[in-house]
Length: 437
Image (cartoon, rainbow, N blue to C red; front, top):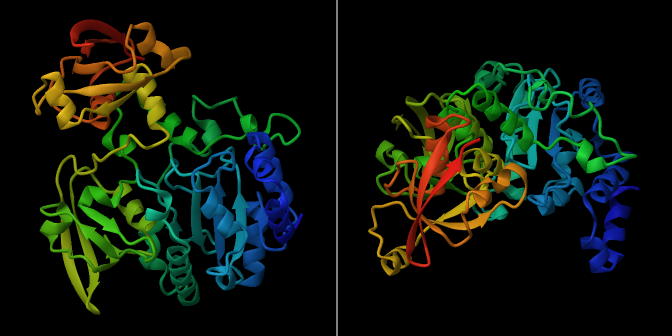
């Protein structure tokens, strides 16, 4: 089925049929829509590389987790060649990869908490830039077709100027990976084939990108080692610098937090960040790539355009700079199993603290949900219920977020330890013990 026909079918189907697709059907329908498309090379990177070499075009490689709801609308716009980017898509060899099973981690690295990511690259595998960002904000606060267009335009310019610009792109290239493919991680070994089983349980045979990040953390946890900040807080959102970037631009500052790292460096709203640590930026994802690969404390040179004039500044990154909010991440669910026995926690609002007689500077995390099955039900089996307010966790009583508690626990405990917990339930204080996994 051609993309245009698939779009027409989706428009005339009753709404309940369009929505009520199970996960296997969604994956099969994606293959039916794009496998024979003239516009996309489907699940075949080698064919894409060959086509790019023959045509002289750069590649646009889209990684998409079909069963995941996040970014579905945006992916549809890209896959169906929305008019905002259609003319530029013709100047790329477009490849659509819908499984993580056999990703070459020596070639492709991106934020594996995403269900949609774009790599813009030369057929010799030199990466021009990355596109695709997620956070705790709504989808279109981070990505837009206009922003993708600008990233594509920048990549096309680099391709035109290649190989003269190749040296400037060195920092964008992948780092040494511990394992060659996701299936080589110990926790994933033997569980997946190299290809999706379209004739059987399709979604279950397809490894999700978030499993790669989970497997990386399990390497440390299984060895009884603290999970490093760089692994706990991957691809930091610009908010750790005090920045909110404009989603319709490459890397232009939309908001700036007072007395933040960026503010102290002299950045201002409206500044366009052109390079960070010497790397030319085509998107917010490019900025996150630099941050992901930056040390736990560092000085980062940043070049901006302000009122059309270039300006060189320096970001001073102190110890612990990357510790932002990770509660929104899909991979945090696995951290909750390890550290919280499957609980989901919310920080108590000041008004609720006052009603419970709790000071503003103490721990107060309300249990929003407890897991029901397997190891995610450990908290439930320990006697913890939704609505409980945790006021002490393994000796911690200072005010902190769920993210902070998760990180502290997996960095300062070992599997098999137990965490004493004090909580409030219906105004009464209870003492319980939670096994850590």
